[in-house]
Amino acid sequence: AELERDLLRALEREEFLLEFQPQIESLSGRAVAAEALVRWAHPERDLVMPGLFVPIAEESGVIVALGDWVMDRVCETAARWARAGIAHRIAINISSRELEQADFFLRLRHAMATHATPPVMLELEISESLAMDMEARLLDQLGALRREGVRVAIDGFGTGYSNLSRLKDLPVDRIKIDRSLVRDIAISAEARTICTAIVGLLQGLGLEVVVEGVENQAQMDMLRVIGCTLFQGYHFDPPMRELAYIGRYAPQP
Ligand code: G
Ligand code: G
Ligand code: MN
Picture 1 (cartoon, protein in one colour):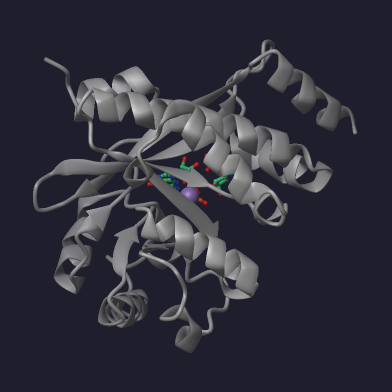
Picture 2 (spheres, protein in one colour):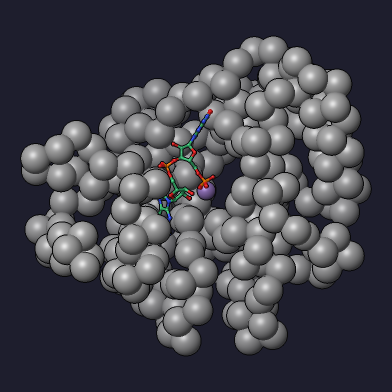
C-alpha cells in the first residue's frame, strides 16, 4: 500500500520517464522501431526498473494511470518523430490489467487524437497469455486499430502456452520471441532445434518474427542462419533516452 501511494505521488510529480530500445533490421543495420520502456527516476534512488514496480502497479491498479501516462508520452513522441521524418514505430507494452478496462481503446484513441499521432507510428505489445485469452470485443477493437495502421505484437512468445491453431486467426502482425529461447542457441543443439522450429512455424504462418534479448555475435550468427532478420537486445543497444536514441539511430541534419 505504501508503494502504491509512492507510485501515485511519482505520477503526480512526473518522476517517470521513458527509454527506447531499438529494433534492428539486420540486412540494412537500421532501426525500424523502438520499444518504449518506463523507468522511475526516484529522487532518492538510482533509476528504478519496471521489473520492480510494474507488478505492484498492476496489482494495485495504478497501472491504469501509469499506462495512460505512457500512452500519452509515446503518442506525443511518435507524432514528433513523424513530423521530423523519423519513421520508426514506437512499441508500447500493455498489461492485461490495462486491456481489461472497458475504455482502454477509447483512452488510447484519445491520446492519439490529442497529439495527432499517425497510427502507423504505433505498435502495441501484448503478452502471449493475454493474446490467447482475448474475448471477441477486444479482438474486434484490436482488429479495427490494426486496419488503421497500428501494429500488434505478441510479447515474450514461447514462455506461455499458445494455442497454435488460434495464433493464425489473431489480429497480430508480429511475434517477439522471448529471450529465454535465444539464450543458449549458440551453445546448445537442443535450444537451436527449438528456436529453429518456432521461427519456421511463425514465418510459415506469415507472421513477422522479432528476436528479443540478443546479447552476442554468436547468437546473431545462429539466428541469421535460422532466418531471422529483426533483432532487439544488448548486442545492439540497451534501452536509452530519446536524445541518445535519435543521435544514434536517426541523426537529424
Ligand atoms: O526493463 P525491465 O526488464 O525491468 O522490464 C520489466 C518488464 O516491465 C517487462 O516485461 C516490460 O514489458 C515491462 N514494462 C516496461 N515498460 C512498461 C510499460 O510502459 N507498461 C507496462 N505495462 N509494462 C512495461
Ligand atoms: O517483457 P519485455 O520483452 O517487454 O521486456 C523488455 C525488457 O528486456 C526491457 O526491460 C529490457 O531492459 C530488457 N532487455 C532488452 N534487451 C535485453 C538483452 O539483450 N538481454 C536481457 N537480459 N534483457 C534485455
Ligand atoms: Mn516488451
